[in-house]
Amino acid sequence: MTYKLYRDALRDKARKLVDPQISMGPPYNPWLIAKILDVQVQQEDLKGIDGYVEVIDGNYRAVIGNSADVRMRFTLAHELGHVVLMRSAAKGQSLALTRFRAPNLMETLHQDPEEEALCNDFAAELLMPFDQVKPLIQHTAHTPTAVWHINRKFRVSIQAAATRIVDIEGRFRSAVSLWDRTTRWPMPIWWSGFKLAAPEMTKLESFVANDWNPSFQLYSDMKMISVECKRVRNVALVVLTCGSHKLSGSKQERLKKNQQLNLFE
Ligand SMILES: [Zn+2]
Image 1: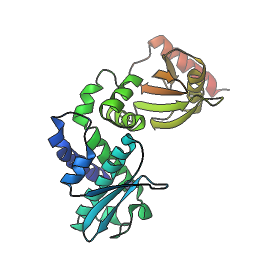
Image 2: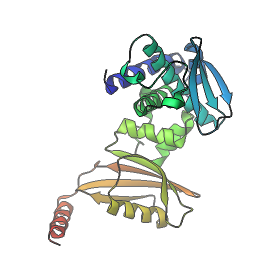
Image 3: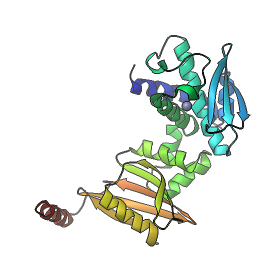
Image 4: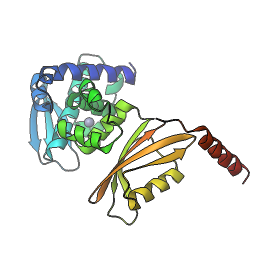
C-alpha cells in the first residue's frame, strides 16, 4: 500500500471515531476516543518525548507527558494513530509501515518519519475535522485571525492550527509562520507551508522587524504573494498567500524587463 492510501484510510478512521462527538461541537475529546478504542491512558512526567504507546499482554496503553492542555490533546490523538496502525499490523495488514516496529517495543525506539507524519495527520483530522474547519476558514483562511480562531475553537496549539489551515488551503499556496521579535533581527520559530527564496525572505524579515503595517505584498516569479502579519508583544504571526491575484500587465512587463536585465549582468 502506498503512503497516500494509508493516509486516506487513517483520515477515514479518524472521521468515524470523532463522528459521535460532532453534534456537540468542538473542542473534540481525544480521551473519549481512547475509550472507544479501548486504550488506557496514563499521564507521566516524561523527559525529551511527548508520549508513546506500549502493548502489554495485548492491551494498549498510551503514556502522555504532563504538559500544556493543547499539547497533551494533540499527543494523545497522535498516539491513538499509532494504535490504529499497530492493530492493523497485528491483523497482518500495513506491512510496509511496520518494518521498524516490534511488539512490546516503545515507539520512541523505532520512529519512522512516514508513520510519524501519518499519525500527525490522523491527529489533525481527529481534533480539527476537515468538514468542520473548511467552512470556518472559507473567508478568513489567509489571515492570522483564522489561525487564532481555529486554535481557540478546537483547543489546539497555534502551530497545529496553522499547519491544518496550510494543509487545507494547499502547501504550494499557503504558508504560516511564527516569528520571534525579541532578537535583533526577527527569526521564524516555526514555519509551515511553501518557502520563500532568499531575497523575498530578507524583505519579509525587515517587514516583520520594522513595519507596523498589518499587510504588504511580495513579488516573486511573476506571482504576487500577499502577506498578513499580526504582531503581539514579542511574537508575530505571519500568513502568506501565493498567487491569489494576477499581476497587472504593466507590472508583469516591468518584472520581465528586470529579470532580462539581470540575465546579462
Ligand atoms: Zn509518534
